[in-house]
Length: 73
Image (cartoon, rainbow, N blue to C red):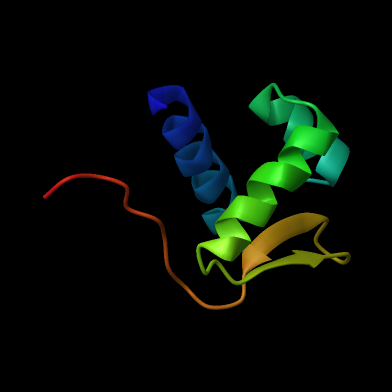
């Protein structure tokens, strides 16, 4: 579970920095398959993340600023 949550947080970080690249590039950066990437992005979207892809910038980004915090406080 910890690995899964860390992966989601890494996805979030790349998206916030608008440094994902294309889906194949993003999957490669994350060390996962492209199919897995789409599944993880789907989870983030289901959690409310306004994720979009810019064809011009070749990167995923958030439509509005924000980030995920997954922790017990």
